[in-house]
Amino acid sequence: MCTTCGCLQMADVGPYEPRRGDTQAGQRATLSIEQAVLAKSARQADRNRRWLAERGILALNLMSAPGAGKTRLLERTLTELKGELAMSVIEGDQETAFDADRIRATGCRAVQINTGTGCHIDAEVLGHALHELAPARNSVVMIENVGNLVCPALFELGERARVVILSVTEGEDKPLKYPHMFRRCDLLLINKADLLPHVAFDVERCVAYARRLNPAIDCLTVSAVSGHNLARWYGWLRAQAAAARHPVTT
Amino acid sequence: MHELGLMQHIIETCRAEARGARVELITVEVGTLSGVMPEALAFCFELCVEDTPLAGARLQLVRTPGRARCRACGAEFELNDLLQGCDCGSYHLAITAGQELRIKQMEVA
Image 1: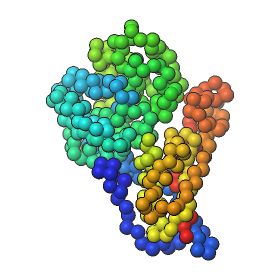
Image 2: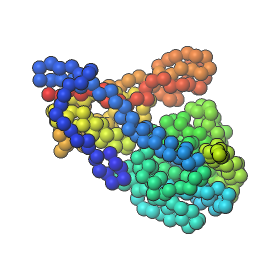
Image 3: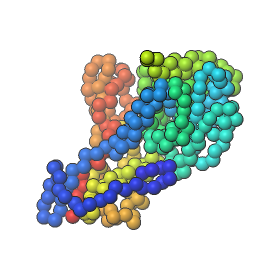
Image 4: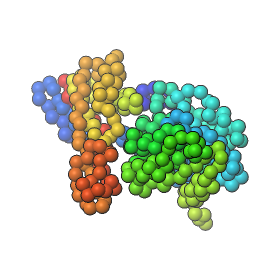
């Protein structure tokens, strides 16, 4: 299904003919299908990954619950790294272009995806958005997924890395409540650290829960408002962007 | 509610595979670690199948168990909860089964 416009692109169908693996008894037949439901989506994710790799582009899939501060973090990152890293943004929300407008206000290019009833961005929608965005070679594409800790975890987009953002107002047990999300991410940003004096949030316990599900996950406590630890986030970003870039070949 | 989109995809695939034959039963395997709720899939099936050539078909969901291998001690065991660890105390696990969502087969007449 094309979730950009909601159309169901059905294949043309011919009359039924038995194939290998099918069994027939009288008028009835059992057709063996053996098809992973997400196989088509995984193929599109591979196409996106190749397209990005050929251009040395770093694509990051940013995911969080609504209100964890993804857009604020992006605004500050885009502003502070302007002139150093070429960046553009794909914004996913069910409705409105508010976030893309906020990103454009920083002087950065952005494409807004409205998923409508959809609860996540999928690989096909991302493919369309990448063509519309036409990011420069060796640049960084930030994909701000729909605010949701459940569904986006299951859908690979072709990104190089996944970043989950959790704010200290949410409770340190979130990794255990949403294990599918936290076990598949490369970096956990614990955001709104400036509010730590005012909330009962145990950073160490949060990190321990995340590492229990995902021993390899990098964890960083940041504040997009005070700027706490943003230099380390930028360092992580630079290293990822450098790894995604093609070595110059002659 | 990603099950809605997944079910639309399942119905689209089955419709194409049936090539015009009447579909009576669709069997789908749902791994316990797939992140997909069978109840929600069943609910979406009823919604999605209406007014399609598959109307009247039944959906059979088969729950397949999860399995993991412990990266610390090598033990292999059934795992149906991502918060569960190995008996050795380690949570460093490689999931080897249970993440699948697969259209197995369908009966047509």
